Image (cartoon, rainbow, N blue to C red; front, side, top):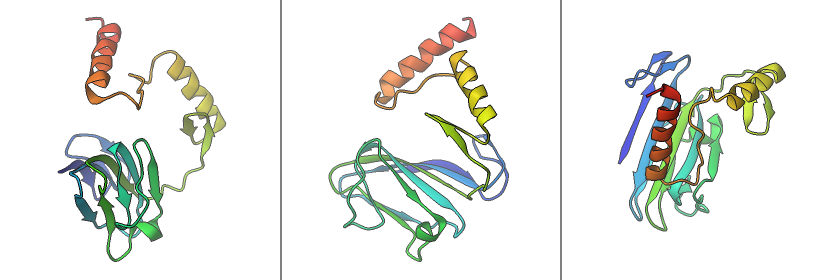
Length: 160
């Protein structure tokens, strides 16, 4: 199945998230041998992140991405006349698909922090160290373990 939120212009998604450019966020679950194809605007980048299982991106013969791997499709490769193709050849797959226009902003990074300037990166590290980023996410956790961590974090920081 596929579920997600997206907007064609700046505004907010059906889920209420503020956006400043066109963006789509899709959660795709594929059964063994399942395939899904979708059209992407010619100016959009696409990221495909594998949460569980493995998925071939582009065509059935492609080397499948494994769990916690990411594919980046630039606007020219993501907007072929056939669209973006995903297939789960080796079992089921759980995939996050992000689509949006390249923003063209400057990029500064250090470790896991990515911002627009070195000063913003420094501020992000400070914010992270004081707990302002919310719940730290360990990407290897299953959904139930992650939910328990979120609930514990809420109790700790909400004062309940």
